[in-house]
Amino acid sequence: MKIIVDGMGGDEAPLHIVDGAVLAAKEFQDKNEPHQIVITGPKEKILGRIHHCHGDALLGKYLEIVHTDEWIEMHESPVSALTKKTKSSMHLGMEMVKRGEADAFVSMGNTGAVMAVALMRLGRIEGVARPTIGAFFPSMNGRTLILDIGTNVDCKPNHLLQFALMGSVYVHAMYNIENPKVGLLSIGEEENKGDDLTVKSNELFREKKLFDFAGNVEGRDILNGTADVVICDGFVGNVVLKFGESVAGFLKSRFRSVAQKSFKNKLMMLLAKPALMGVFKDMDYQEYGGVPLLGVNGVVIIGHGSSSPKALNKAIHVAKEMVEKKINEVIREKIILS
Image (cartoon, rainbow, N blue to C red; front, side, top):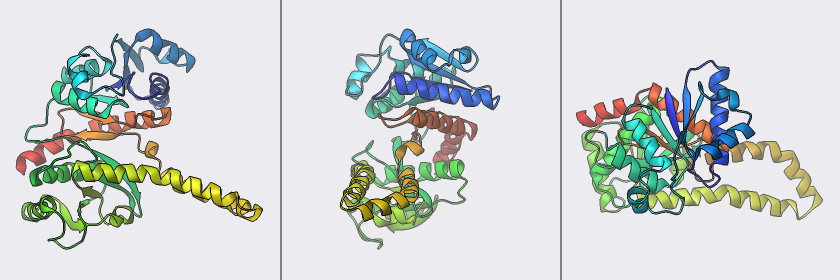
């Protein structure tokens, strides 16, 4: 298997990107797994960082560099990414997947640009109206996948239906959850609660019966684990995502504030630290590595721009598992039958 990594995607590229790729390559070597990671980007920069990470021995069998003079910056618009930098590390990596020279593509870069380039280079899976990106939230039952989290702001009921179907397939395959429960995010559990999109989507979900539909769920149900997959349009999903990302930082700040009030409080926080670290670990997006761009005709994993080497390493393994479990093939079959 060949997995392409966008060497210049991310806030700390190529440093964290190359470091994470070296970590993954060392794991492949240790397990004697004959997979190769191909890093696209400026060869000298990438080679220098590989040397810094003592990864020279991995070159050839486990690591490869494909040189590009261009790359897409985090602040650039998707339109600019499509029209002005067609020889970038992102474009070249996607093109290699399209030509069958690689099996998957991983980027911690500009999300809008990744989606735009993926649609242009790879296209959609047959029958998919709109690809979608999700995010994982910790829950009482492990994790909850939220779809969509900003890719599609204006949606129709059929779009949400396909998001739900693709999310159900992904969670079932990746986490061995039999008949994942799918919830529709709304302002109440009743079928008639919510805006026009939510009410009509609820009707469509019940009519089609393509997955285990748990009905409407509320915001509190995301963390309660009422559903394995929660569906909403990208506007609502992005608001939920940004709020969720702020919670861990807020709690840490509050705990520090309480600890500073007295020696007794400091002692209590010190004793509770191992448990608190476990809680914050569950809330750390880097524990999930990256999320798939579901619906494009190729395996594409997108991670957070500020991802650490650990997160990039995990994203590579997510890509590997998606290829092994042939998730896109399953999605194609399900969409056609729907």
